[in-house]
Length: 186
Ligand code: UDP
Image (cartoon, rainbow, N blue to C red; front, side):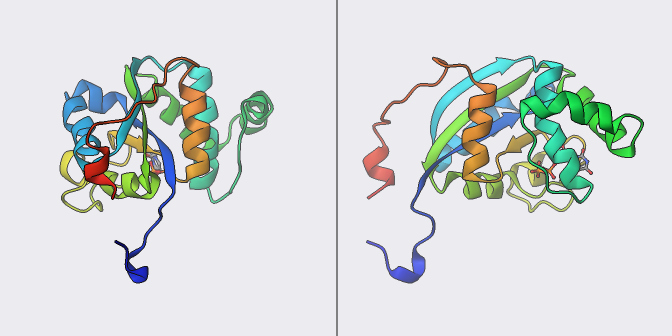
């Protein structure tokens, strides 16, 4: 039963959620997975993974640009040219820090599916700066610094799909129907 003013997104979406190396090293894997699981989202992919440098570069080039005030969508094939263009710049220094962080140890890659999962996961994760993240959120409860904020979550349904395709190979995702489904979605 939905009253019109209570309807949020009813779209089934996918979000790429990743526990960053600090989350793995600090023994927070179970705690973080449990928050998404208990909320009622469906886990479709899960793996412990050492992120190759090339993948880290693709992922962080867009982030780097955004943090420097530019909105740029970077695809794998743009990477080499962009890296060359950025050499010696402040943005490149920022990027290499992000890349060393994300390649500094294993990460846990996850694909989660659910109604409105993208925005909801961002709420569960909390603000980028853990000191500004609300208590009750993952970052609000478990982290103190932006550069060590333990978890990543896609920022749009399009990026959810794109990032899952980037981090998972074919055959690594599983579609299944949890028995609790009818108790979560009427
Ligand atoms: N980041 C950082 N310093 C900054 C901004 C970002 O170390 O000043 C890192 C941090 O790990 C952050 C990631 O870059 O989670 C991606 O930044 P974004 O702005 O996309 O934030 P998020 O979506 O992760 O909240």
